[in-house]
Image 1: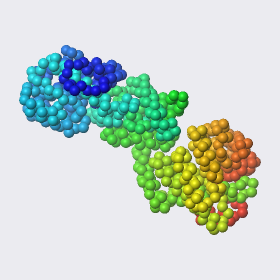
Image 2 (image 1 turned 120 degrees about the horizontal axis):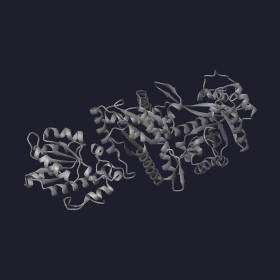
Image 3 (image 1 turned 180 degrees about the vertical axis):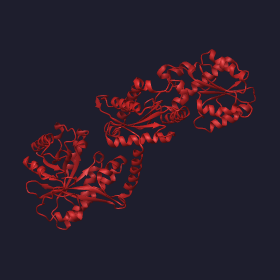
Image 4 (image 1 turned 90 degrees about the vertical axis):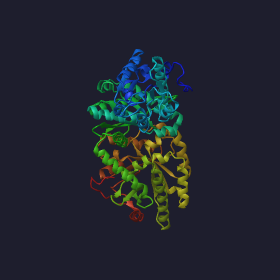
Length: 625
């Protein structure tokens, strides 16, 4: 169906067209009785029709006419004061409304419907014996869709009702469905959720909302373009839809007549409404099914992609008895699932809500941290294992929070990446490190090569290379004093394109280091093509390496491989002398860790620049790295 006719009263067969291409009900309650037409071939005969007339005989006559042509679902009342509550509870597809009634007339009902966002889309056919133009004009101003003159002609009734339902179906398609995926949109979902929660309160039932967020979808858009991103969203939407349709768990647990609703909320987020779900393990089983389906390999053209998602689950009435409260709870749970690990789901809890509030407060504070000069760089020495001399340092960001004291990066860097604050933070670290090196140089100190960490978000930004050049030029610093550390996972993600960025950085004289090596899945065919200078072995592999056979084998292989590629090897998190002895035996080049020094503020670190050899500190096992 491409357009609405100019005259909805013309005698055309809209019913067949509607059943082919549009959904005949966009409102929640009607949907309970009316499956989507494109799924089950339902026609407008399944629509829910509400009749309000103060005469029983009029209602009986109208219903008889409509039953004769196949309509099946009716709601009626002769008490006009009850009409408004009945509309809210039943949400019909169309209202046949008598205009002249005692107590509350049709004009008043129309006016109240137009003032209610949940009811104003319901089409209203007025029933009136009045033929004057003024009466009809007033009703049209108040939102009436059509008129039927009393006494009602059966043929005219059927035709006008059919046309009205077909027009509503088309309008609902535009208003309630996502253009890209064909799924219900946010407005339809919220309307349905609101009704389902009220149904739950009225009949003592329960339900669940699943908030689904794709992992790292922005990277797909950035790397492959929005066209591919749209194709991915359509493919994921189809998988989710088929998964819910085929799920015997959903079929066995939802209340009779209450069907799950899948919607696209916008961007890369989807929601699932599960009415009638009594037990949390049912919602968990549905969530796991969705995780498994989404994680299957996805072919877009010649590109094979692996997409994962995280899901937040909220139950009602346990987690809330209002629409916004339940949806917020599901969103909080989803965000915590994303913080935990990809491809996981979490249930909402009061503890999560408290942590969410803390996170929001921390985000607000972090936005002000730079302007309030609360950030600081600490420096941890990198030591040559043959000579015990300091040959470099890693600049580590710390936040001097006014209430919480010194806050480590593990507490706020993930937050900064999620909120986009990582870009100004990264620029601050780069410029501060270069200025500090300039200060030490002016004081006549022997400069170490200082490493700064670049997050995956920074690495994908086009301005990174120019930012490095500007920082070096601003501090009048030789590039050989700077090293850029990039994690293994970031450097291997879209490895072919990353080579050119690394070449640009390296061409200016800056050294390159692969951080946290051993935690990802590097391809050696790419690794040997990267213009890197050093490889840092992750601290998780160094801990107790002298007694852990598996870690020992991995570390041995990494050092041998790196040396064969002409790379220096730096071991992170060295805390014990047995670990140091093991690394020296394997001819590891450098190390850093509490065994030599904890990270120090710039003033204290400057004293180490005067020391020829660093002594061992042998901290307690609980010191951490």
